[in-house]
Length: 464
Length: 136
Image (cartoon, rainbow over all chains, first blue to last red; front, side, top):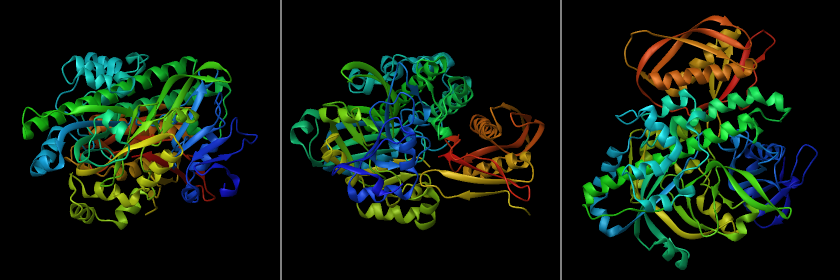
């Protein structure tokens, strides 16, 4: 595949026409400058493969942070007709409901700077991060099942948050169709002591400040002001979600022959949404998603505890929003003149309903963004990017960069880093990622979501 | 000594290329490659034994499903296994015993074993080769 295979729709949107083996055309939201770079890996081939999925509607799409995943490219969006289309775990990802939560304070940078180091340390102490690090208590299966069924709502009912947390959360913090019985024992065993844990890799907590307001009216609506201190959480469903994905990919691979589905890539394993296996996967995936919302809710609870400890009882952290970027949702759209229910897969892509806050993390030490969803985003099933996307492999990053040097570079910019592992820092170095400003510029110009505020980190807390 | 496995580049995850004179040896070396990705810190020398049983649609899936099951044991038991003794091994089914040690901590996390680009091939000299992608 090369650039000449792409037709320019406008400055921010390119299309590959439907060929025999595709059911629909493929589209990428990207600038011309970035388009030259997307051929470095197999992401375009994956986007084309996705277009061959049964029941796919309109286009297989990719966001400007597109990079190679398995099956779907990361940054991939595809909606299938729920009646006769498929559901595919590869279109969700292994980390089900990996996503973002943003909390706002009433404080500004100068209020917090004398306490920043103590605050970061306290947050690191309260929220276990790093591999295999769970909490002290293992949930009973009964308790875990309630979390799988009711997600963040269950935690708020138990006193781990406010009603506002649920109101300002995608799907009010839980998907109704979740069924704990569809989650196998392996997954439950991995999830019992991980609610309220961060995990590792590119997951993080950040204390940030609002660096620039880019849309005064919407920023005011969201309660954001310049130099305001906010807290961003990036994590997902931990071992439980990964195991659900693993288990159901296995189930689907065994089931696919009976549905006569043949695909160019094994990782696109899928079954009809209405089939027994499809329904069970959706119920299990929803349970995994609920677990992730509960996880972020619990983390928010412990962050609030840390803040009260260091800054006093009166400090408040209020949820702006919580949104997934690895998930499949049932949504209704008018297609071909009639209302259809679609299974919208967003893998490394964020839902962006009109007026909804959109939270986009940068790579470590770089900017993050708050955007807002638009009506125009309907063309992409109200979806937008999710972050920067990697450009360098983890091993290349650890070979060419030193964790300590990166910490020093960030310190020179006034950013504190709390992390147990130097190698983890090197792997997640900003140099290993695309430029977040460029990615966000594309979705802004393409009208998928509009910039509201630019955030920069004050302190980064990471797992190993 | 013959090469057991190699760690390869990938933009966002980790790939292990494993080798074996037999299919069983390929599976063992893929497991050893996975261990290297995890970078475990062994707790003590006491031997831990775990029974394992896996059924799959074909040999390629069997390798991934075997590694997934081993990964599950690694994470829930906090152990790592450097040996496997197969009592049963066909293209769609295996049974055996994992032998290893308790682990104090891991240096890296593996979220899942994927089927991405997986194909077990047998070279001219009869050497089996396969590349497995791990989501980290």
